[in-house]
Image (tube, rainbow, N blue to C red; front, side, top):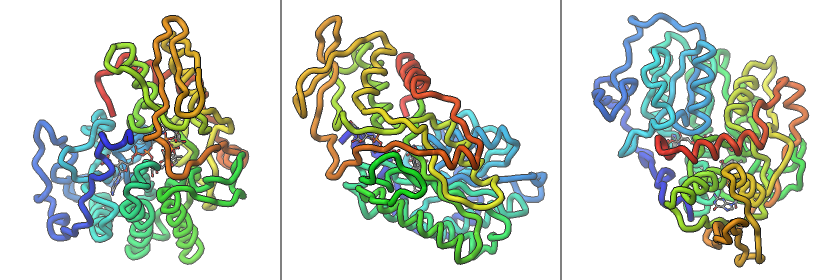
Length: 398
Ligand code: NDP
Ligand code: GDR
């Protein structure tokens, strides 16, 4: 499985509770070359001016979290980000924000409800009020990994959202705070496209099942307690910041690696799977718009068009001037360079999933009406940006 090399999904504190340590700022590590200053001792409440609006982002070190943090800072928010304590500090995507005066990081983990509660209290202490918005983006977000780690995936992706909602309720923040949950088109699973807010859910992976629990607990806290909490049902969105274990980035990175002679052949799983791919920058803007509405509403966000993995491959190689020809079927299918005959892509059953989601295509009509949201990036723009990044990379390999 392409995800094994990353090891990121297993990077958890294992649910340990360290209440005393976490509430004492001095216990946070001192700044050093490898540990950025925002992880150092937080500024005491008295010393900061009270921000007009603040937000907390879980999963701030991930693809969407990094773009959302940029977006909110540009909107003059104070941004608090939850970050995991790992053997390395996973700040590659947010390095450029670390010295921003309105950007603060806090150690935490969604599998640790006590810690989550303490982080929320600390944010309130620092700002002098609850954050206006919470974006729960943290997740074990890899579908294939969820078959290997179903229990852990449920802890983070399902119970993590419950812990967060419950902390908001216990802290009596319901009148002040709005919560966004990162739902997913994977919840539709085998329901035929196009999928919209009325489409029945039929999840096909432990990841999607966990997200469905979180979806419904979010609806429940909204209905039971009047919390402004919404589910964004987002279709696939990508970027040069996408982790290399997801198929789009795996492909665009391979285009660069093959060109530089760093890879012999790109090995992929199901080339026939269809996805509705957009750009992460467009989707984080929509998340924010969802929290600016008068009434909370769950919405489907997507481009409204789908492409096979094979089409993505063809387009990505074409962006680098390589034209592919496919031959064979099933596990024997290959793609070769039309100009040289060199085999560049092979099918590898290790990347097949125990149960696959074959066809996802959004019907985003409602979101476009309600939010007046129009994506700025087309599918072609997305592929081009990712390939260009990976042809010239070596600065970052997320
Ligand atoms: P990423 O995998 O890039 O980021 C996930 C983030 O969650 C990382 O910051 C990661 O931290 C953090 N995280 C993982 N486990 C924990 C934990 N136990 N406690 C705290 N933080 C944790 O995902 P994306 O940015 O692509 O996606 C954001 C959210 O949107 C996810 O919930 C995903 O499931 C959902 N989603 C994504 C879509 C997409 O196409 N991108 C589509 C639909 C939904 P670390 O850096 O330490 O690993
Ligand atoms: P997905 O994204 O499962 O849709 O979840 P991913 O890029 O992993 O897979 C998309 C499709 O491509 C097929 N595929 C491969 N996938 C990977 N990872 N590696 C391969 O080599 C490969 N070959 C073919 C897959 O089988 C699948 O059909 C993403 C994540 O961001 C989730 O968190 C999010 O909820 C959904 O998108 C919407």
